[in-house]
Length: 177
Image (cartoon, rainbow, N blue to C red; front, side):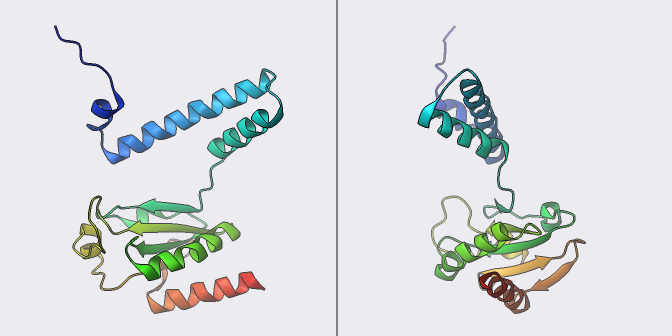
């Protein structure tokens, strides 16, 4: 009988992206518990502050920005949150306007409790350049990005494309004062 060494490489390369995500979340949760236990056991000073901050970050994550799809088809309604306005930003890291817009979109989502941003990454893993042939790009017949869709708190589509962009620009201007 041959014993196979358990290494991160051979164990994780057989996992799907979704499985990898949940494995990471489980490890983060265990890390948070360890940090909390260390603080309760008397850890003090800068290390205690760091441990408390990390435990809080893991157990109280910011849920107002999510990245989904990674090139695969997606059912947008699965990402809606009842009672919240959800902005879908179809994005590629190879799209300069997308990258330029992203910090403003994140600021909007972080500044308003009633808004969630869902970034729909249209690129499949390993594809360089804007992946116009990805299943999600084809699903939504994307011809330009960033492409925006805004769903209201009731789950109904409120605005798309230029109308959604104008709505979001107004919200950003309202934040500035």
